[in-house]
Amino acid sequence: MHIREYTDDDIEAVFRLRKLAFNASERPERLVKPGTRGLVAEIDGRVAGVLGIGEYAQFYGGAAVPMGGIGGVAVDGAYRGRGVANALLDAALAAMRDHGQSLSVLYATVPPLYRGRGWERAGLFEWVELPMDRLLTAPRPTELIPSRPAEEIDLPALHECYLEVARTVDGMADRRPPRIDVAKVLELDLVSVLPGPNGLRGYLTANREPGGGDMGRLKVFDLVGVDVEAQLNLLASLKSWAGTLDAIDLRITDPATLNLLGATPMRYSVWTSTWMLRVVDLPAAVAARGWPRLANAAVDLEIVDEHAPWHAGLQRIVVEDGVVRVESGGTGAVRLHARALGPWFSGAQNTHALRRAGLLEGDPADAVVLDQLAGASGVPRLADFF
Image (cartoon, rainbow, N blue to C red; front, side, top):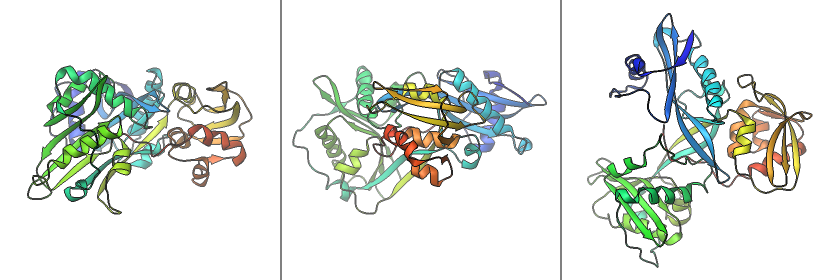
């Protein structure tokens, strides 16, 4: 088996595999695009499998940590059972480390495959249905902020508005170019902005869609406000659709919108996808992440990770003068398996849960620094699917 980076010459073979695996109907014009690369596995000169890697970064502790987003993994049916997907994932780990991507995220349709290579569930991608009668009970704003349609000149401010909120929600992508083209947002049916004295106070993006009833629905991709009045004004703009919509589908960008301002009932409809996180390079990931300021401390680890040998073995997480780093050595008092690193890093699971899952071993007193560092501030989230 030979694994290499794909080129545009592979487009027909890759499209064939993805059409078979995902029922893809639209052949892309290009395979190699800015912000995206990928690998193919060849057997006897034929493309037997493919894997794509997107260039992203996720916010943790307010800092953007470079992340490789894995997607479009497909294996020719004639070559299944021969380790093609596992070989692609192993090669992708090394490739992501070489490109400075210390984390990796994917949306798994076959979790056991990815767990076998160190990925584990670590956060949510979520849509919520808001019936109009419930939306109408949301609080009214006390300050009316006039909205207007977005223009191309607003794009930098719109992205900054998103970042102001996203950097406070662990797991959110920073939507960096070239992988994400912010200008694409103007292709949506509705893009409105709330101007402020220094940029934008908020914005809303949506498409009008049929289905779900006689009047159809509004699919809201982003409802982002930097303060309570901005959020309430955006919710009020959705109320104005009363009588013309059955419901609104809201993608959760800021969990405060729904949890603290919305009038959702005890039971409501939600569509959730879980994403899996893998720490590709522990020292680099720890150095890039934002951490709470703690007193000087240290925890000795033994990292069990046969697929990322560059960080396996004895490692020590050191907190010193407000800086957190990983250095080689220590006693290995706490044993962490590769699958434990992702949910610990994101704050999705504490050391007690990891121990019950068989992913952490050692005295709980020695692991306390790990829980203090992660300092989970809510469910890790992504508002982008790939």
